[in-house]
Image (tube, rainbow, N blue to C red; front, side, top):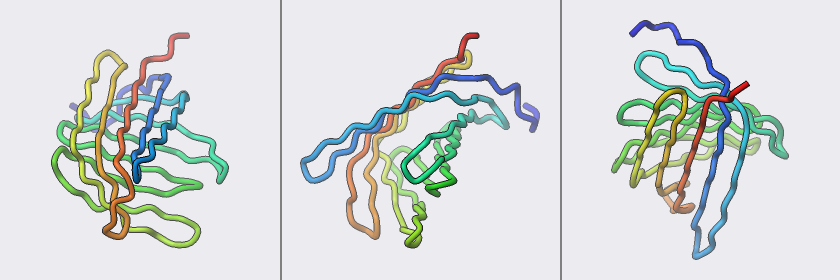
Length: 145
């Protein structure tokens, strides 16, 4: 496989996040459009999200055994997910950088023909304390013109 990315395909992306914290459940859903491509054996999704704080650019890198989520712009964040493992990360705010840790319970992805699904179940810790249990589901498909 070459080091150059393949053609970037326009995709429709649905991001569903469910958070359980102290017995409370919150669900967030985002439907947006972005790009999908493959490079060096990994799949990439890129999309932007408009938030109250401003625009956030997200990159999701899906590899065989781990997934990396990078967010930049109004929010800067780096999280790594690998089944049954803990990984340090960071969450930058205007007030400073928070140390975070993800403890991935399950990581499942399926990619086929410019469509796919990513499902991550994890605990998020901030400064060593549990900040919540998360379920992140991302579905995408090639945008048909």
